[in-house]
Image: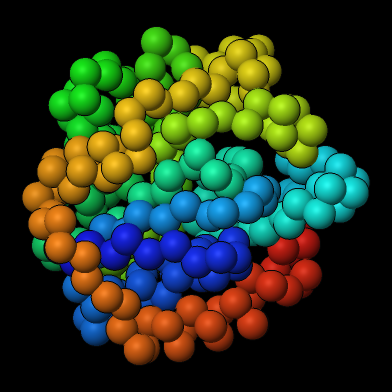
Amino acid sequence: MRLLDLSFDTPEENLAMDEAVLDGVESGASPATLRFWECPARFVVIGSAQTLRNEVNEENCTADGVPVLRRCTAGGCVLQGPGSLNYALMLPYAEFPETRDLHDSYCFILHKLSGALAALGISAKHEGVCDLAVSGLKVSGNAQRRKKHAFLHHGTLLCRADYDGMARYLREPQDRPDYRGGRSHREFVGELPPTPGALRAAVRGVFSVEDSCGESTAEEVMVMRRLVAEKYSTAEWTHRR
């Protein structure tokens, strides 16, 4: 599996790169890939099927210059930025038959992630459809986009929670996993104590990925730039719902 430890300055580029690599894996032009990234600035990102006004306090985002984007995967609305280490897996089903079924794929990957955290002395539990929680506090939210031959699974590993930003930019969600109950963002979200470097190493270990970093292909970069221009930076995509 190729390792990409590759972060861009803008949220549009970071989201587009995940989709560009997925397209490459789907076509067979790119190998199975584990990517890590972290955005240097705050932004809000909603799931592909969410209605923006239900999830985001857009007035506060506009006032503070916090971008709002829509990703290509499902899942819920989150605040991204420094302290949110993202991992992304772009995997072909043929190489990972455990992932052909949606539910099974979440179980397979989140079991791996739980093992990575266990190696760091942290007991994490798969909660709801796509969360990891420590002592009932969410420390990783995950989402997928599935194509014919491959899929993208990406998620956060929350090293530092921006509770004030969550309260200011995110509305309390209507769609809640049972284990959350009526808790607010501040009451529900936790933090992971290991350093981002330790988390990277632990995740690489459970997926048997060597620590030598690979490079993106020219085709992936070209597709990423096209997706930024035609999709992720457009109001038509962000405000489609």
